[in-house]
Amino acid sequence: MIQKIISTVVKSVVAYIVLLILGRIMGRKMISRITFFDFLIGVTLGSLAVRMSLGNESSVLLTTVSAIVITSMALITDQFNMKSSLFRKVEEGKPILMIQKGKLLYEGLSKAKISMNKLLMLLRQKNVFNIEDVDYAIFENDGRLTVLLRPEKLSVNAGEMKISKPGNKLSIDLIVDGKILLDNLTSSGHTQEWLMQQLKIQGFDRPDQIFYASLNQIDKLYVAPFH
Image (cartoon, rainbow, N blue to C red; front, side, top):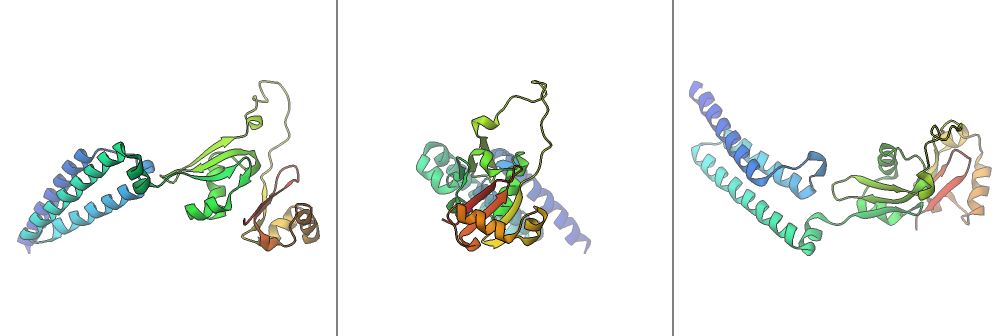
């Protein structure tokens, strides 16, 4: 039993050293900027390290060879990535436009495979609370959202101009995925009849035609249809 423990310790140290060397060879990337391909490589090497630590002597050699081969392939892939834009698109994909000129692009959310709630969360992380304030929003390859505000929203600080501003008010989600959020509608001080009237003004007859609708701080209804 003691011999097995010592053997496992030694193999674990060897696995750690091998991964450390291979990691240095591959280079470093910030966790927030790794692509899905980088993530898969990391998981694969981690799995090989476990096999290296717990396997027998022959499996340690074979696993080490496998790790070296995978690392070599990753390095070759990085070279292709730097030199070929076509290969880069195949490996990483390309950024997806989510919002354009204040208009929510439903097909963008479908391509990115993220929900409306996730998009709103990413916008809030950028201190953006109204979709209409956004000129462009782009979902990057690493899962981050890049946001460019409309020019009129890049205003001078009110404190510098010595003027008072009304208190901020969050927009209220009224329709998500074609369904009316009754609690939110009630808290906004409006009724379903009012909501349907506002939808008809914008050319819609039913809430199931709407992918997302919200009420901003000046009681203006923002509507994004499914198509």
